[in-house]
Amino acid sequence: MKITKRIATAFAVIALGTSVFADEAYDIVKKSSTLEAPDTSQAIMLLQNIEKNGAVENRQMNQYGRKVNGLKSTVFDFRSPASVKDTRVLQAEKNGHEDDRWIYMPNLRQVRRIPMGERYKQFVGCEFTYNDMAIRHVDDDKHELLESNVKVTAGSKNYTCWKIKSVPLKKSEVEYSYRVQYIDTETYLPAKIEYYDKKDQNKIMKTYTTEDWKYLTSKTGKKYTMRMKARIVNNITGRQTFLEIKDPVMDAGVSDAYFTQQYLSTGKAK
Image (cartoon, rainbow, N blue to C red; front, side, top):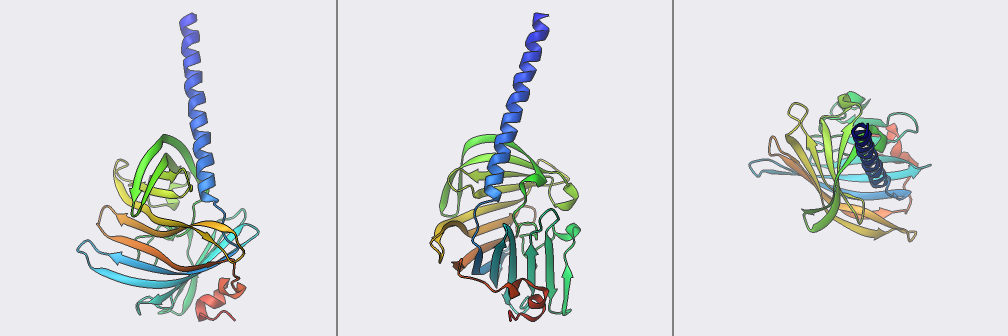
């Protein structure tokens, strides 16, 4: 009887510990995914697609963002090179519904909605996917805290991180089986994310790193944490994409006209 009671108590302690770690992991990821964002933003985004053999393709796009009632919308407007110029993507969060994502393809002169089943694909030929270009909702995954005080170095930054395993609840919507996130204890930014292959769950298929970030002050005096440099590496092909933010301006106002299908097709915010 005593042995049975001890066993039951041990299982209860294990179960309680697992629950606490899950709750802590959820809270950490929630804070990371809901960092305060400006009401409006605009910036230049520089992309480098770097092939395994070292060949580099440079791309530039303008980014416009806004937040209305806590819901974020972002427009990406490619300006160069000629092969992608005037390609535009609109991402809009929806309350209680899946996010809307639209793309304008200048060769076809057509705006089309990107369905959920295609959002794991490359973002206009980059190693980032459409999913990577948006912040994943905390409730889309089950989270488990694996380790604390993990040291990570990425680019010019050294981080102390929580290591958290995040398993998607709807695996058909993503290209990986699960992620391991290394979330910085100071900023709550993801210092590193490892994406594990669906076929071989012990194999890292791609790796994301935040290589630089800054505390920036907006036009209204508010302070925000902004990722300035990031990289994603395809561990299978060796190809990678490096992203850098230039000339960010926050809370200075951005016309609502940018966040319309008309802007996607015309490039005119009037």
